[in-house]
Image 1: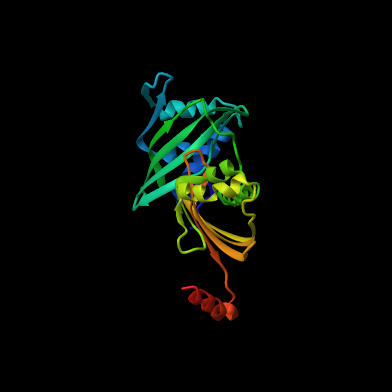
Image 2: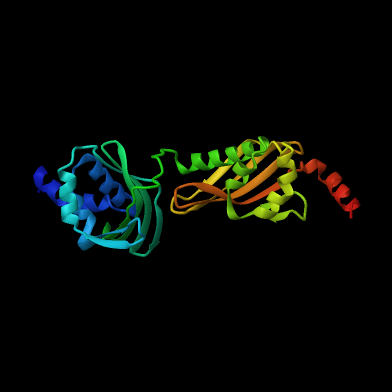
Length: 287
């Protein structure tokens, strides 16, 4: 028997809805896409029964307030808005899952009618009961210190970090160079004794920066490895240097304001295989 088209569509609707929520990220994407469109159609199915909403704010005196929100009232506000007026832009999503439980951490900037209104971080808990649905949202909100909206993807930002870091050395700009490294960063140079903390590396390099004659390394090839669920990434690169072609490998860490910094970097010489015996002979001759 052939089912009427409308009845068939109604039967398939729950299946299609759950399929659209087959990852936590898909659920969050649907949530914020609906907000931007001022369209709450199907938004209720993104939440589990009894789902909760909380906001944490801190005033100028340092007092913290926990506000309990209402998801129904929140969605009513979306319906009454103009399409495009509400735009919550997520900087990134850090995701952790264990079976049917997921936690998503999403720093955001909230844009109201084209202007930055406030910013903070959303913390979502989601449960997979046939599709990923939201159990709880807790957010922080502040009007001060919001980063400007930036559409650069993480890989492009890491590329820019590495390029700017090398250019800072070429300009002998010590503040810019070491400012792009984390406070606990490690730098490993080509000499066996060059295993430095950021402070030790800065002390070694200080005379070169002061003389305006720091090194000038240019990347000729780079590969960035990034997992969107994490705040760590790494890259390797070939460098054109005064020593010839060197290889650098770096680990970068994302800070809370979506800024990447270098946490670990290793510089090594590249030796062509057909010249390896000669290099080994030189190194052994120095011992």
